[in-house]
Length: 85
Image 1 (cartoon, one colour):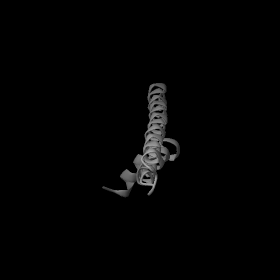
Image 2 (cartoon, rainbow, N blue to C red):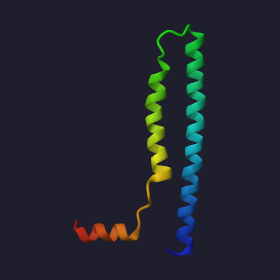
Image 3 (cartoon, rainbow, N blue to C red):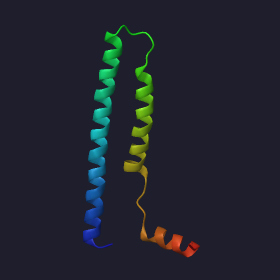
Image 4 (cartoon, one colour):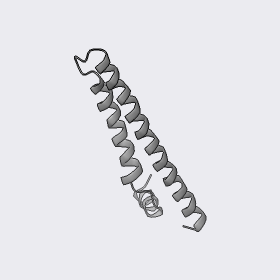
């Protein structure tokens, strides 16, 4: 991989990490507002849990993609080609 491709890949990873941090910040702010709304409205059944858990699953999947999923390499592509289409 030449320097230009490496630079583009690094830039793409940095953008994904920045977008993930923004996603987490929005998640925390919105869910905090939902919990405050729940508390002000008299508490009772903790309905914000559905949003917290549902959106949390999306955050977890996004975190996996950004921080743990390895990029596709030329060797991966060649191996898939060799398996036959």
